[in-house]
Length: 139
Picture (cartoon, rainbow, N blue to C red):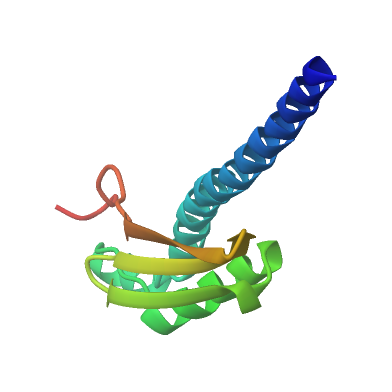
């Protein structure tokens, strides 16, 4: 009888460890996915917001800040549900093109026993758009 109780405790301990590992894996996987999503969406939104008329006349790269924000929100919302994310834009400069984005995600509340914990994951990305080479016809 004593050995069977040890067997039950080992099974319960194993289930507990698996549940904890799943919770931790969910938080870390979400963080990695969010970072790469923000990075890719920022790059695409900056390319969408390039002012090509200004680039043709002056040879300098410039983006439209409003178009960047609009394109970022549209692209980001196509990939995730926006009701679980808080997006802040700070430091959006048109020339030279630079944008800083902070995305805060709520990963939920976990209750273990009488205590509950919530994890807020914050990802910050600073994106700078560069062009290689020179514009033909400009000295």
